[in-house]
Length: 69
Image 1 (cartoon, helix red, strand yellow):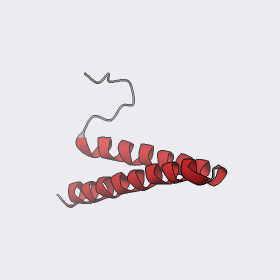
Image 2 (cartoon, helix red, strand yellow):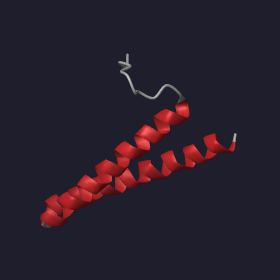
Image 3 (cartoon, one colour):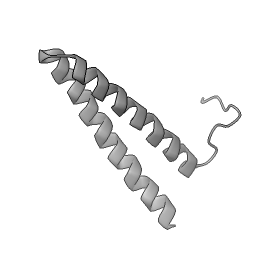
Image 4 (spheres, one colour):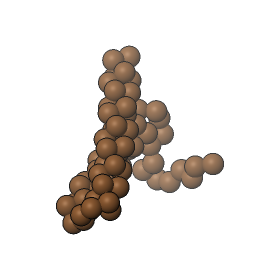
């Protein structure tokens, strides 16, 4: 069960916005880390970055659907 704290999102759209912000931070971290590495380690971080970007796209499309309603 998820703990609800003050300022926590309470509805679906707010949750999507929060997830979008978290994914944006994860992508920024992956980009910065990727720049510091070479070889196979760099490839792995770039793969993570790609997965985060794909998830971000899904969240953005979901937010668009929620806003249209």
